[in-house]
Image (cartoon, rainbow over all chains, first blue to last red):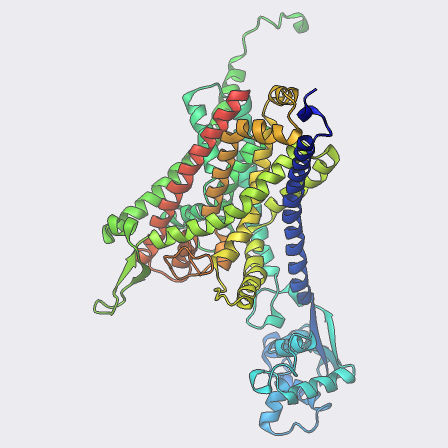
Length: 302
Length: 318
């Protein structure tokens, strides 16, 4: 038997080593792709997790009638639009009595979110009996304070003149924290509001609703159309030039970049048919046209 | 009794025939939606592109080396005429696609070969769905990851070795896009490799070849046309990809082949041209349609070639 056919020969050992190596290349390739995916998920998880909590400040508020509703009408719009800033400020000053001049008071008020006063207005409008009582309310802290409490601003690393949160503010924040009047709480606002200029008041509800309605329209159009087309092509169509054309066309349409569908929607639905802009209706219709080929191909092959 | 009628010889009643035709007609109408969509795309893009070429000569669009889309507000403004040359956008798109394909091709092909030839059923059943999960992630998530994690990492790494790397480098967008393309290449190549007849493998084993030798010297050459088809489909996807580049690539047109510099792509420019308030008949807005038409011709061309290759290949071994 010639030497090179023996399994123990150096040639064979080399060939088997190559086999082993080649298998490892495959394993490494799969490993890279999957670990990249895991890395991406963890990175997004840790960057996103902070948004589910937000810093709240407890303020002891005196709902004085002369401030909120001097004429006593208890009208909803009046209650909502009343000036709650002095009321909140009074509450804050109970813990920081030394902030008396105008500049300091403004600085102190900046611990709270700009949305805090609106929030208070909503509460009073929902429950006008609050007027005349005193109560501890939790309102949102400003995004600067929120970032500081979450450890994203390091007062030692960053010099004071580069921060918007000054040393004085930090001292006040710490005082609130020590008295238990400043806590991170679950961020319900995030799920109940739309977008906002104030990060601490922003939420995903309006965006989620937009996605939901667009998808609903898309589903209602694309699902029946796609299934019926698949049924026709599989069960009814005889081989003809028209059927061939439809098939080739569907395969090609599936690979048209999504941005081109967007331009189709812009040119035809918006400019030609003059449908309203920025509505889920138009978005859903364009999405339906885009997903149609994929639905047809998938339902045919199963 | 009615039940004793001979049913086999009865002609379909007129009403059931009409119903049959109505159903077929409705089904045909559904299938035609796809055709009308294509016609709509081509017609709307062509119509707006023609209006664009009435303002900007087609030669300076196709071969111009400068891209700075702006239209004059006043007639005597400095730089009143914008430059609409698509070549910097094309090179930017191709650079990012090239980087993406250099990441995706080895990863996708090796994964496909391993899954199709070496992995046991258990591994395959776990790994395949995981790879397909990559294909199901919305591209905006990849874009987010590229812009906020990968790009700073690459820039930081470059600074360590003394390289000046832009924070919107083609490398960041391209490499993340490459990972996005892995499942497209791997699942199509997997099908293609599985379609190679067992007889070819058996013959190779009979000649004394090892498993790896069979794969590299018999199976892969036999599967080459199909594999090339799958790569072309992936390239067309890379060229048309929007969200990753919108988030991670640059805005300024830059005629360069340096992967460390920021480049812009055709899709990014379409997005930037159309967002914001624009009058609809300015050259700036119409340029978006001209770019889209170019993009459509490019991706459609690649697709037709790719689908032909895969189709021919499948027929060969069917």
